Image 1 (cartoon, rainbow, N blue to C red):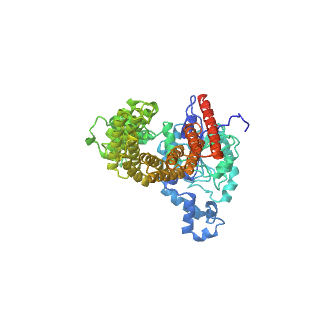
Image 2 (image 1 turned 90 degrees about the vertical axis):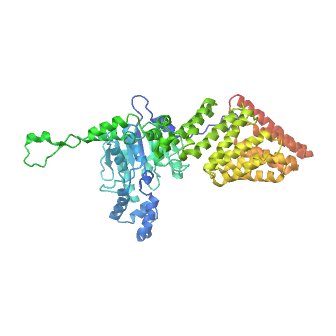
Image 3 (image 1 turned 45 degrees about the vertical axis):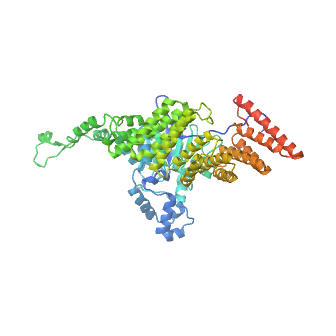
Length: 633
């Protein structure tokens, strides 16, 4: 790259919010969308994945498994007779239940957001889910029919690309699917016109359907490939993503969570049979014609028909009564599912906790927790003390409910912890009296959370952080035992934590704090060991390398070891490399080089001074760029 040429920024990663934004109504109607479904969408419904079916064949049809040309799904299925394949698939499909991925998808279809569903699955779960929400898109079986007329396709349609459970043809083998590719190409072309693509639960491996997507030059309205893992498969990267084609990967989602979250964001979830079951049942009855059951008297005259018994005469008034009495205010469970935590809380907050059923208390507690978390996040973003207090009030009530007690106490402690930091007027290292009182209260809440749940790793970690913060207010006076208590909680947190890099880093910093007070070289060594573990867990953790450099620099001043100085310099260099916009690493790097130069002689001293000047120049350059709101390269 030529000097002075700005770097081209990497394209920002897409999220589910980007899809929801693209799907939102821009004008009278939303943007149309085509969805491609794979086997991953049906796993939670009880239908196994391709690899599980291969293992079933290996166990129950060992001769066919041995005869297969390879041990992937198409070839293992090809080794079975056609009828055996059908029976095998049917056994799983007949036992399957409608899962929440298909229910949320049905809601999106009914809401007008999705009008084309292309599925490689044989199961009828999409159409079943649609029927459950009183929505009835057309269903086309493209394994049995070779005719496609786009002008006659219904407004909302489901296409079974490889056949369906009760269809005449099920395409399983590689040969069958490959031959069929040309017949389904027009379906893809129609689904592509003016539509967003969403691909869920589909691997694209061993399936020529993927080739039809890969041949598309540009997805004008975007394609979003939803993956279970954090990174896209190699063939998706090589054949679909990149080159500014409009295709994006969003990882970390299973089918149920993706579709439910997506439907929530588009205000299509939960379905009416959850939120208003009696109204839903009444709507179902409304699809039936009125009918009076025949009397047993075979000689009944035609004019007696009016006296026959109306089949629904008892049910309809009962439904109307239930709607008036139970559905004027929606259930708390509905509000919780739809993320309307304030409305859920409002149903219970004027009632005594003792009068609530266990189920209602559970819903109330989790609604309070979620609302408290939301308020806490807003308070932290705006430094709004009123919102902090509002969040704490929610946590305080949730702490009285057994199922949410430990989480509420922990979150209560977190809010107090952040309030303590806020009370220091943008100088967290300066402990004020009010900040100290808040931190002591935070520590007390963490202890209460641990008393309820002794294995609560995050509570142990945050209690240790609070104790370390309080101990730093005493530094450099004396070893008051607070840091040693923090060490015990870090040790407990390490055993169960999901974030070992964070806990080891915090532990290392606390060990370093006590080492500076006591000058105990053993504490320095323990500190360095935990920094090393944290760095191995997360090689790009800026705080690890900056704090590791500080510990080595302090140790070097005690040992006067050039080796320790050089190690500190290397850590500062790595920290500056990880976070180019921060000048703290350059500052410490510069002064450590000067300290090492002061203890060196002749040529080595000159070399270190030259390095220090270069670091100083770089630090000043970065400061100038930051003042101009430019990113240092």
